[in-house]
Length: 191
Image 1 (tube, rainbow, N blue to C red):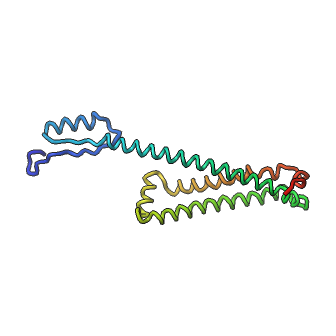
Image 2 (cartoon, rainbow, N blue to C red):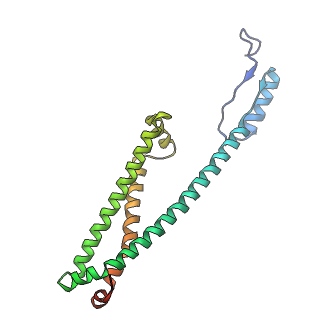
Image 3 (tube, rainbow, N blue to C red):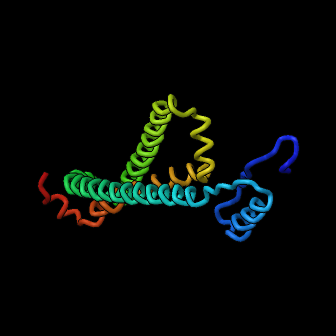
């Protein structure tokens, strides 16, 4: 196309970063040199950007994981302390006729309620974040960006269910002392 009416002087080549150098850069450099065109390649610059973004993602995920682990340990300790404080209460309820099965049912119901409250609270915080960030990016852009990252309704549902299960297991592990302890020991425990 060079030497025609418009007299092109450069070539822009868009390829996948996974494409081999022989299939793109060397071939295009040979074609451009034969046609008298200048060629610039930004492949290394893009590769550096991708590496920088991956390092940032790893940093964010590892930091978030550490924060999540610390929060779960603190929450687990709080649940265990609460279970110790409730020993006497459930001991008195068992002494007046509550069976262990009824106690488990009451506790399971509480665990699920806490899990649902936690999941709903998380979605509310995320919704507030979306509204706060709507000035810089539109909600459609943010949702489209989440879709590009692999997020969708199934992932959101899975994460929500996973959070509910994690909270349920956390409360279950902390409160299981309530139905493993004998009645006499529950009644002897101090408030």
